[in-house]
Image 1: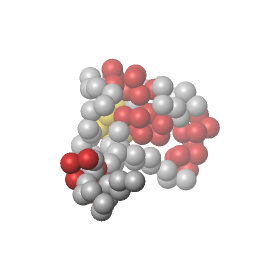
Image 2 (image 1 turned 180 degrees about the vertical axis):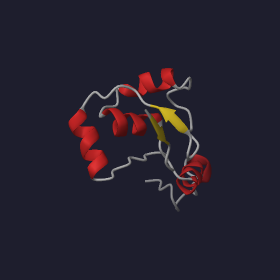
Image 3 (image 1 turned 45 degrees about the vertical axis):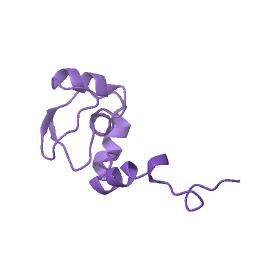
Image 4 (image 1 turned 120 degrees about the horizontal axis):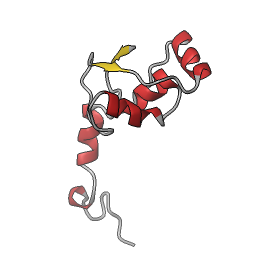
Length: 96
């Protein structure tokens, strides 16, 4: 069976959606010849791993739940502007 990747989905999201558990992510990576941490493009077709927890898969299907946990571009940008290099003493970095 195949599934198309939706916006901001990772292999872990696809594993949960199609197999019912995160452990299937390693199988998905092997079946699709990709890494566990690969950034997936929208509408990319992926072959699915065997269902581990049918109740979870059925619930996600019936309720149209599509987990998507990857960061958006805005969130990634916000993260890169944090840290000691972006702090001003007595503004964001308070010395006591």
